[in-house]
Image 1 (spheres, rainbow, N blue to C red):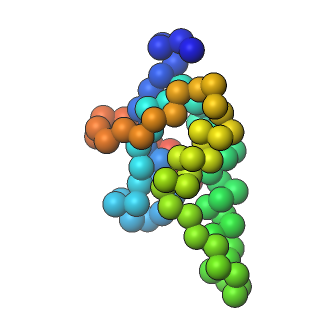
Image 2 (image 1 turned 60 degrees about the vertical axis):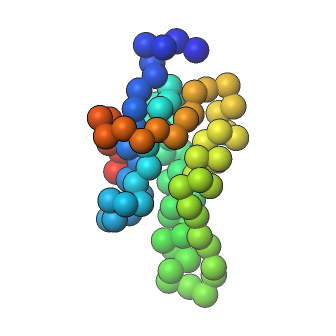
Length: 86
């Protein structure tokens, strides 16, 4: 791991700011989105059907940790960060 690649990222998955979460990570935007987007879209698509499909921020964080166990993926609560809108 190179510390020069570690950054703070706000992940935005809904229109509600209180549901955003923050990561301290060395993952790229593309790596984060490749894990989170399918989970978020599955829940969004379930709203149009009778399927129950829910996620929470901890589940999204766990999915990132499982997909990238060798990378830095830590919840962080500072408000100085980049944003990703998904």
